[in-house]
Image 1: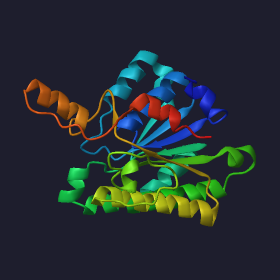
Image 2: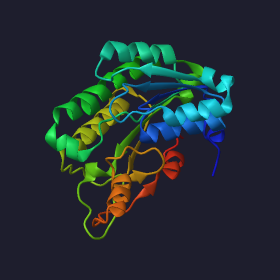
Image 3: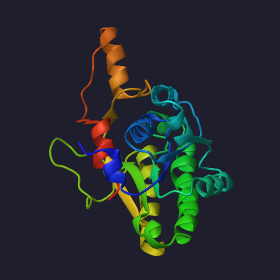
Length: 248
């Protein structure tokens, strides 16, 4: 597995949205352990946010690593705060993982998913676009915004087959509809404004520090309680996703 340092090349400043979340935290931990980049961790610190795993890494690595991790407590729905955070970070790479992500919550309260995943992504795109347009030379040539999405935008797969980048979108829940909308915004900002983007649509993930509303933690609790466990789909391990979704 290539190191994060090799994958980043000469990029020195990385902005990670949702870096106190499950996958975002895995990204931040790897960046701190394997590179010398400065990580700007933009997170609203919501119900599923947890800095414990990052704090453990910072404790292991010492003062130098602490200087390389900058927490920005910002809600993506606050356009002015997002713009200020992007200006402060002055990033060479943006990895956008912040999102409301639990399907059941999107059914009981879809509004927050539209605000966060659609309007929040728009605010980030506008701020990043302004930043990118101010870059020049090699920094402009190598700049990327990586938008992390979900395979749920493609709808139900059925018993056989697979999704690809050309599969038509067919979201089936408020969550997947909000992520589909954010995907379209990201692609539109690329085609209209020339913003260099990478978009990945991952399947369900598991790993350490996952919030206990997701399947693997739920399955563990059900097994401990002697309850039945449904099997619905295939899974991808979080650390592998971080590598496969690397900027190019």
